[in-house]
Image (tube, rainbow, N blue to C red; front, top):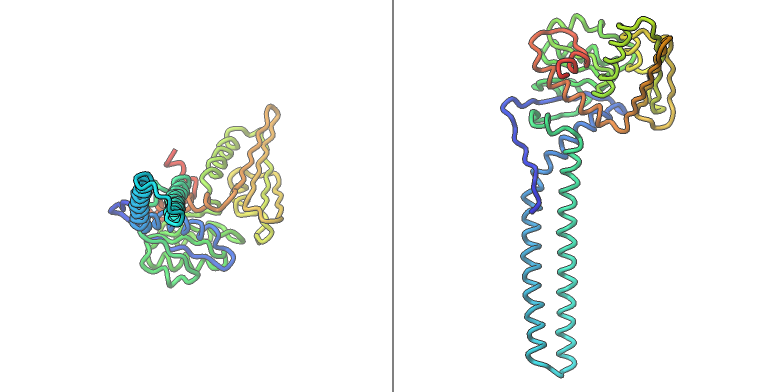
Length: 318
C-alpha cells in the first residue's frame, strides 16, 4: 500500500504574501510551486486511493473470470470451433483489460511517488507546516492581512512596499537588488522588522559568513569575486556581490550576463601563505525559495524592530 503524506498544520500558521514584478518572479513562483505541490498531495490522496482500490477490485474480478473460463474449457472439452474461439477471445480481452488496469495502477503509484519525492527532496517539509497560505501579487494592496511580506519586485518599488509594511506592522524581507542599500530603510525599520536579503540561498550565505570571518582574522588575505547571471538580469554587479563587498572589501568585482544561467558566484582569496577559492552555482530557484521562506518565518518571530540580514538568521541556527 502506498504511503501518503498528510499535512498537519501547527497552531501558529502563517499567511505569506510575495510581491513580484513581471519577469522578476522566479523565486516567488518556485516557492508557490513547492507549497502547491505539497498541498495537492492531500487533495489527490483520497481520489488516487479510491482509484487504486477500484483497479484492484476489477483485477480480482478479471482473474475470477479467467479461472472460470479455463475450468469451462477443461470440463466441457468442446469441439465447437466457434464456441472455442469466442471463449479464447474473451480470455484475451480480460488479459488485456487486466494489463491496462495494472499499468494504470502502477502509473498512479509512480505519480504519487514522484510528487512525494519532489516535496521531500525540496527540504521544505520542516517549514511548510507553518504556512497556511501563500499569495503572489504585483499589487501591494493585495497583501493586507498577511503575517509577513516578501518583496521580489523591483528596487524602485521597495521603498513604498516598506512604507506599507511599516504602517501595518508587517515584517518584510527585501529580496530586490539594484541601486539601493539597507540604510535606505532605517526609518521604516523602527516600526517593523526588515530583512535585507539580496541572496537567500542558505549555502551561499554560509560561505559568505566564512569569508567574512576569514577576512577579519587574516589581514594578509585579499579577495576578488565575480558573478555570472542570465542575460536578462539588469543590475551589474549583482546584489550578492555588492553585499559581499560590504562584508569583506573586495579588491575587484567582475560580472558576466550571458545565456540562461540562474546564478554562478566565485570568490578567490590570496595570501602569502595560502589561497582559497569558492564557487557556488544555483541550478534552479528552489534554493532561493527555501532560504526565503525559512528566513521569513524566522523574521516573524523577532521581537525587536530593526534591519536584519540572512547572516543574523543563519548564525542563530548554527
